[in-house]
Image (tube, rainbow, N blue to C red; front, side):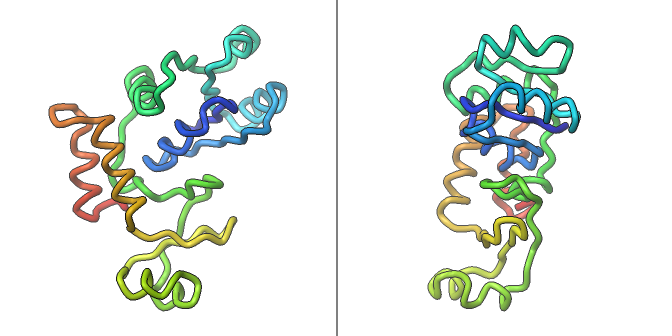
Amino acid sequence: MKFIADRMLGKLAKLLRILGFDTLYSNRIDFKELLRVAREKGRIILTKNTLIKKKVGKHRFLFINDNDPKKQLKEIITNLSLEIEPDKIFTRCLLCNNKLKEIQREDAGGKVPDYIFESHRDFSFCDKCERIFWKGTHHKHMLTVLKECFPCGSHHRYVTTQAQSGKGT
C-alpha cells in the first residue's frame, strides 16, 4: 500500500517510512499537486485538512482525526487493516522515502564519524539523498516509539520484538 501525506502529517509520514510503507511527503506540496500525484501513482491520500477531505472526490483517502503521530499511526493501521512486516522495518530513507540498500562496513568508512564506524557493523545507504544509516540512538528511540504504538498484548507486538532482535532492521 502506498501513501501520500499532506503537509500537516510529516511526523506520521516518517513513522510510516520506519515501518517500511512507501509514503510520499513534502511540506511544500499544494492540494492540486497532492491529488495529481495520488491519482497518477495510485497512492492513498492521508490528510488532516477538512477542505481536502471535501475535494478529493472518489479518490482513496483517509482523514486523520488525531493530532498525536503515534495515535495517527494506530488509526491508519486499524482503519486500513495494515499488516506490519518485520523485515520491512527501517528499509526506507526517513528523509526521501527511497529504499535503503545494505552496504559493506568498509564502504561507510570515511563517510560516517570515526566513533560510529568503530562501534557499528551494519550500515544502509540511500542512493537518492546519499545518506548513510546505522542502528544508533535514533534507531533505539524509534523502536521505543513503535513499542508505544503497539504495546504488549497488541496483535502487532511482534513488530518491535523482532525488530529489536535485529530482524528486519
